[in-house]
Length: 434
Image 1 (spheres, rainbow, N blue to C red):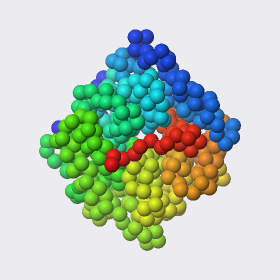
Image 2: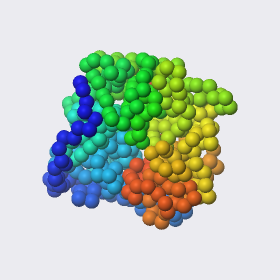
Image 3: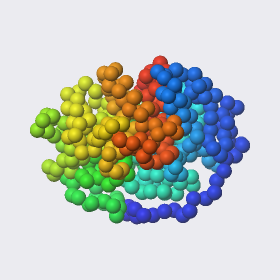
Image 4: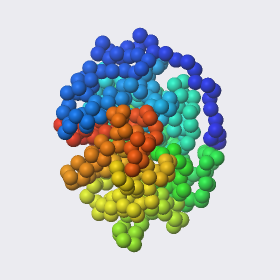
């Protein structure tokens, strides 16, 4: 199947909310978004260490509803913020804080079912695309492995949190199957009958390793080497989750076996090709490899990242290879680690040098085992606020008023998720199928 990387399916049609699609009496739907009393209550009452942190949390928790809208077909569309498209990755992360409310609030559960259904229909439309318009036409077709993994994990986590199987309609089953099919096909990139290309790709050779070829990083930047280890890690977790869903909810033993087998092969590939020897740090995870002996040692702020891997269920924060990797990526050994007068952390080649991403700071806090490190990172997050009470894509480590993306939902939702666990007494969301 040949893919045209620049294909678009026509202009986005006008669409509006319908009163008939109101999620429940406790959910108010409007063109600006949706809101829930249960979420609003926690946003107003949860106590954080100081007024600044509390205001930032309130803004962050309510941001998801501000970015979401009910579509004509009963699904929920979640835009990234100042870019009006829905990214499969971003939308999954943006609604994650609402998983804490889904078991006890039927309106929130219905909202999440609407998100899961839309993502599944998007996957069926084009599993090589990473972002879509409200009418399901493709906004961008950059094949990113994590864009297949995120919707699987969202579906699995919803099921684990709520026990609700009604979300798993035939459309959802079809979308999950599409993700599995592409993952399996891209173990051997370029083989018939599938082929994917894009004008931004460097088209470097890659050996067959058992891992899954991917064109782009979660930053939407093209890979240098096309086995992106953080995304491979997330794929292992998602495939194990999919195997459990197929076995226990969708009752398809064939797909369950395929997903489990693929997860094992990818995991073996990570261990065989993704662990390299650093002259000072010892054994570390590479960021990208090609299976031909080339490896890129770095980390990017976007998640999945090497730093964030324990937070999404791959390995343990106490694993020696992870700890070596963590020391590497949080130092000048990582070419995208920046420090200055107002901040220090991981940035990205997607933004200018000297710009740190709050996403990476939150990932650092989520995976830190030292309370003092958590407090230090929280202070850096507060210092990144330029005065608008929001977390941005990136900020200048010497001048937080210089930042990118005035409205970016992802870091705000991730901070809300972190604060609900750290200060709200919530158990962390489940990660990784047994």
